[in-house]
Picture 1 (cartoon, rainbow, N blue to C red):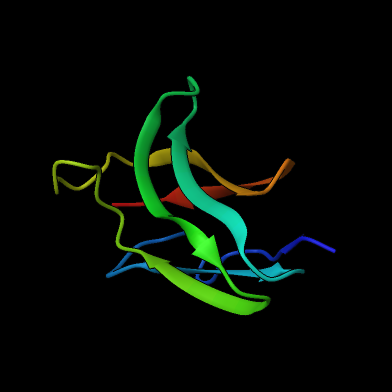
Picture 2: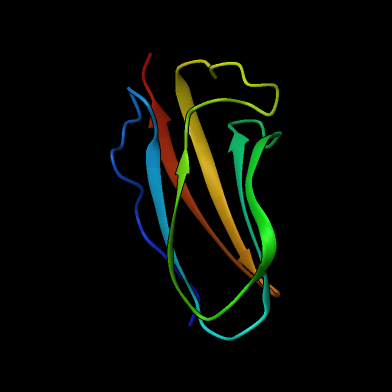
Length: 93
């Protein structure tokens, strides 16, 4: 079963936040991406085929250009194969 846990720390206020998730089978196409409140992709944290297991990826609070994102509400989305899970996070600057 695909699992996506709450990020820690939340709110993100320093160097980053940990996103923990489970990939249930070998060789699954896996993507972790951050979106703003309007649904625009801010950054892709991970995009690759992953073996079965539990993982942690760190989002540093930066967009794809390397700039700090503004304070606000963001969403992190895990897609493993056809399964999608979404959680909310807060950034405080």
